[in-house]
Picture 1 (cartoon, rainbow, N blue to C red):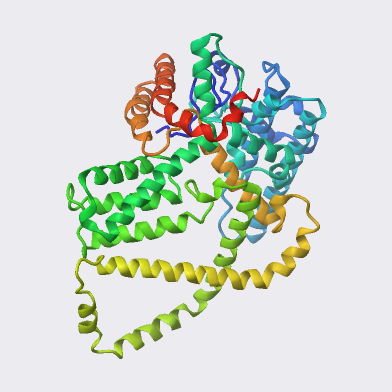
Picture 2: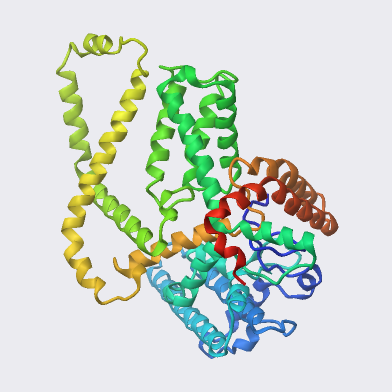
Length: 496
């Protein structure tokens, strides 16, 4: 089923849409997979760049985009090959060597194609066309790929990801959106163009963040004071959770899914304090607070300068991961000692029941969850301080040798931070992106009809009409909010 990341056949470009070939171009162009299959019999180091794109492409940017998509698709297919099984260790080792050599050779060819593109003067529109032009993967297939998709998935070489022009372009798209050629002239077209340009990735992210904070506020009120969940708040809570689950799945999908499942047994009534389903809401809230500190979709980190905050976030969580991985070594002994210690107390039950009898207090399991959250965050902070003291002298020495802010905490951390930022830019630069829970409207009126049309035979005229409906619906549902929030960055409206 198509998701919000699937490129749309939009006939009217905007700041949030990808450069997608027209219907006639899609039928004429060979698929990327066809060109990638030819590389199997080629010597990659001797391969001519002109053979990596069809002659029908006229512009230098379109040719480079197709060539890079072909090479990156071939690179991904080589790395995804299943290794041989069995006891023939020589064949398994030889296969690994051949896969490594093929990856190295294709990376060399990618660097050559990229260097050829950079030799001639270009503009921001040229680099945008290279990164955002979509081409079909297979003949008569609705699946299309772009260079930005490979960057966000981490399927590019380290040198390509670290290239300064790629980084600058991603930051520019995050701030101002993906520029494309202008549409029709006239007052109406100009007004629609302004509304479209207001929906830049960071504005849409801010809309997502505002609704997310409202969602967290309702959940916090519910876990502390269950009677405060009015029908209106319950509707908003479930609507947001449903919209989140309707998006492409990631780690941030788990808590809303838990919330939805916790409401199922007693629906339409909410979970009651003391019940297992009520406890699951606590852990969903627990998980949401942790995710605020990770470079995920609704993280607060993207409010700040990405090359300053994201490397620090990656460093912090890598350090915590290393520390906790080491601590697992003592986990069996810790659990055994805790059980033995707990069994040594025979009168703890009455004391616990006495403590829970308070006039209009938050439920006891809420207190336990919030206390656990506090202890967890305190433990994270202590571990981070220890880790920072341990590694900072080495990182400080490395920082002086590397001028790029992204790589101040080693190249490995900088690459992970760039990938996290590229995933965010790719998500919010998707054509007609609907922030949660507004995407529920898109699911009902756009994605469901499109899915039915594709199942019934993929009628192109109907798909194009659905794409137009999607654009009009976006302007009605998302456009006003994007226009209001874009007032925080009014200067970008007049950037040519």
